[in-house]
Length: 258
Image (cartoon, rainbow, N blue to C red):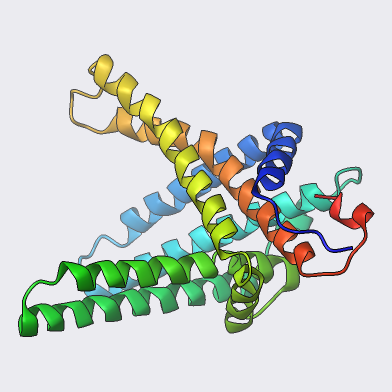
């Protein structure tokens, strides 16, 4: 039968999945942070030259690593959802190189799009002066496109979709649920802010990090990341699955898996 997408049900399901798999998700988040920091260290150590080619190589390497870590985390969540009562191996949560490159390509496409908006904005400023309305319009368009394509990474992992195919699929499942998807996005932002506020307050109250080295802020970022990242990613994956099922004529026992 038809299952309409529900924000309340999505958050409740995401919370249940997080509680059931909290240790696994936290441990994998720590591993992801460690891997990224190691790669970042070697990038800074090896590519010490300030020329443009070295900088481009570093950026591309970091994008590939970030894409791989993000995809592996999404795949872990899907595996935990689909194989709750079954054993799975480490290989089951590793994305392919093809998936990683597809994700990087989408990120590059959005980077080009944003650069194009910036270029157009500069032309408008030179021709007509600063325009707050035009900048606001650009921001709305970018946020709209990002919101409509937020689930493309889910299709890359779940269906091994190609870049443009995954974007089309994401636009399709959010077409009739735009404002509900916007509600999910607002909840995600709220969660990130609510966790960040006490971290900042504690740093200011106890006058931490006065040496200016940034170690406390970096540690605070790690804590904030570990507290928010797993829950946010679980919300996205659960919302994706429920949006997909809301477009299908399926039985209750299938939708109850999420």
